[in-house]
Length: 467
Image (cartoon, rainbow, N blue to C red):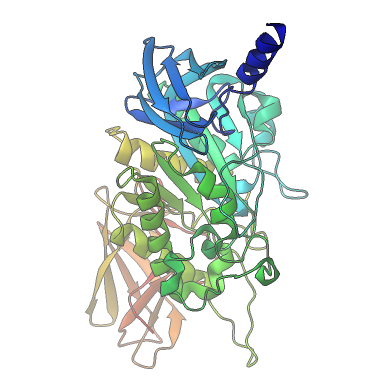
């Protein structure tokens, strides 16, 4: 009798539901939707899930391997609540908030913490860290994981925003979340999956990369030449475990590693967005991204000619928001550093992403979230007249009604610095050395400091030619 009781107790103790790390105490769940939950239990065991906000019970049976998955209805933003999982032994998640969940991904400029990198600070971070305590903002950072084998879980934990946690957290993501929380007055959950120096290819699966023959898919561990640049390894190690996590959308800051492969980036990045959306099966969720900030890559060819790599990459990025629905690009042409690839103005990056989300996703009216962009040009005698889109309030210079960043070229395709001035909604550009201009460029260099705006948002670099 006693032996039977001990055996039953042992089996019950080992029957406890296990959950991936992303489902743990302190988490945020997406509001007003059906939110996915999954985990493991004893094979063929019935699992009862009870949601604390309405005491509703959900039932699911684990499969032959013990895996189970279900979706629960979430209410309007609020909390904290608890969720109970029971397959014979109870497991309770506490301190759960209901609000807005965003996945924040990319390379070092997304990964860069509020404390900065050594010798590379984040502007005004110390005071912003000091004032960061906010239990309505919850933070989760994935441990870096690179592998050929798709993973089912990650290493990480949820924490509320406070100086000690914010100091170590992504600056771009934090400033984004802080603005969204402030304006919507709802809890915000930020999940950071980022790795410095990572290539776009690393965040994609092998099937998507078949369209890009230069992306060599590793067949074994011996083929992994770089933990953060090899195709598929971060998709498998860091993204795959999160697929299905119900969220509002994604913010992305990546592209510096692809600066020398700009010719494929627009197609590749568009494929990544479509692929992530297909994996999540959550419709065309919002996907907002930063255009890489200007930086002097100092790329010199054998003939001594400087190659404008990063301008072509910024151009490729700009194409994507016009090709892929429900996307938006935060322009950072005025927020770079000539000799630093990790700009200090992370609040600018995060809040411009936040403006996109607030205006395009959350419907906040009365403000503009999208930068002006090039529309067309016409030639009148020796002057090129440039028109713009998304510039209802017309363009303006940084300090005056002029710009120092325009160039024009004639049929010889040689570009010369030009005088550029604003008249009402258009930019007029001319150069004495080019009496018959046929093409115009703005900020089309590795490093510039953008000086044309509308509603405080910078015009992105562009060219009218395809040379």
